Image (cartoon, rainbow, N blue to C red; front, side, top):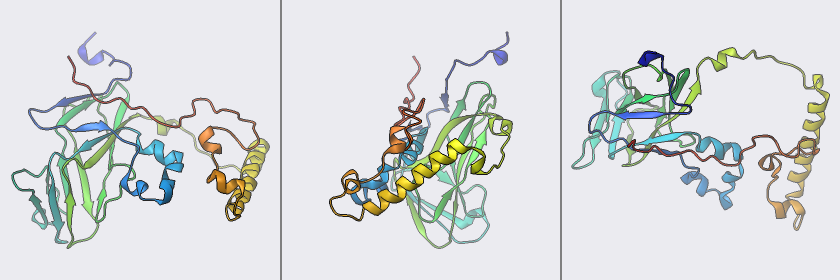
Length: 255
C-alpha cells in the first residue's frame, strides 16, 4: 500500500508547524467576556451557545498590532502598525479592506474530512468580520490563510497579543450534500406536534410566572428541559448522546 493510500489514524488531526514560526493553538474555551458581563451570567444558560463556543480549537495571535482601512481597494489601503519590538502577524495581501493572517502550519485530517476555518465563534469584533472557508486538509500540501474584512473605513482597530484570530474543526466531506432536505407540516407528525405544543404552553406559563414574586419560576430562573435532555411530556427521559459540555483535547507535541 502506498503512503497516499494509507488511512490516517482514527480521529487524528495533526498540525505540522512550518519552520520556527509560532503556532499558538488551544481548545476553544466555553467562556466569553461578553457572556461574563451579562446579568448573573445568564448567557451561559444557553446550552447551544456553550457547545458552539467550545466546538474546536482556536489559533491565537502571537503579537499585538493595530490596523485600519482607508476605504480604497489597493493593498496599501490597509495600514498595519505592529506593537513595539514585534512583527505584526497579519498583512494586506488581497486589497479591498481584507486583513490576512498566514497560518504557520499544514493541517492533516483523516481521509474524507475537511477542515472548517472561520472566525472565533461567538466573539464579535467591532469593525471587522471574519471570513470562513472549508479546506480539503486530508491531501493538500500547502497552508491556508485566515482573512478578516473591514466593515467600515477610517477606524483604527486592535488585535491583542494572544487574541483568538481563527477557529477550526473537522467536517465530513460530502455529508451536507448527501442529505435530502424536505419541508413538512408539523401536523404530519402528531407525536412531535403534541411535544411541541406541550413545550410551548409550558414556556409561556414559565415566562409569565417569572413576573410573579416568590413563584417557582423565579426560584428556578430558567427552564432546564433542554439542558437535562428531556421533553416536557416525559416521552424522552434522557436523550441519547446528549451533551452539556465538550472536552476537546489539546494539541500535544509528538514524541
